[in-house]
Image (cartoon, rainbow, N blue to C red; front, side, top):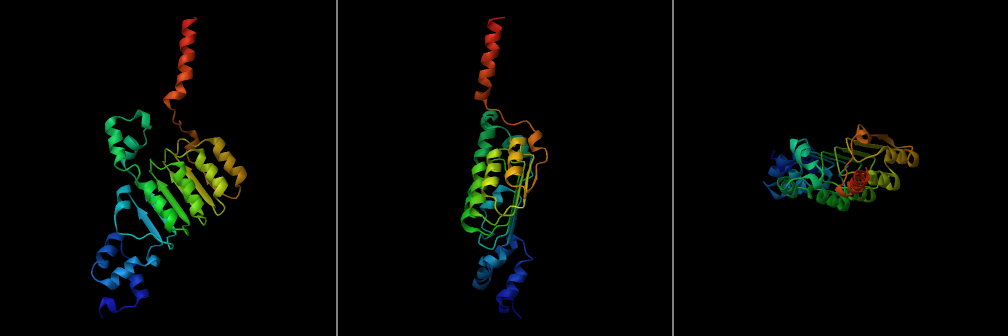
Length: 228
């Protein structure tokens, strides 16, 4: 029996055992298998190990997507992306400019095409913002699990979004997110007591401090020196 003689359900089952690249390669062999590749039912789970994978055409976003993970475990995250923008060298800024909007742009597509998403994990995504998270919460109303790890631009504003729009949320993790505070965590616990909330190290890390926030202190020290 030839592969194309199988019915759609059998082909979907076979495709489910293949990785994204293998699915795409098989879909290029004939029109029938291309239709199987494009079937939203095949894509209920997606995992990406780097932002550059988000630009490939080896997956399909659709209403069947339930579980989405974008994890970037790279030394570049620690050495470049996690540094405050005002401390980056020109070289570091140039590196970031090549990928800093990739995850945000991808999440915007998810907002418009995947309303039934249940679980979202973002790890090492140093350029996503509070607005990205809040947009996901507003668009994916069935989201029950939100895991954010080592996302340095995430602040208490994301926690406010959890409190305001997390009607279906059951579990929220914000691990190693240095701009999360104890006050923000406590506000979520008070407004959403049913959410299982955890924050490993987040509220214990040193938050970002913009240069302009240090000016009053410097001026105060200068005045003390003048009058001493």
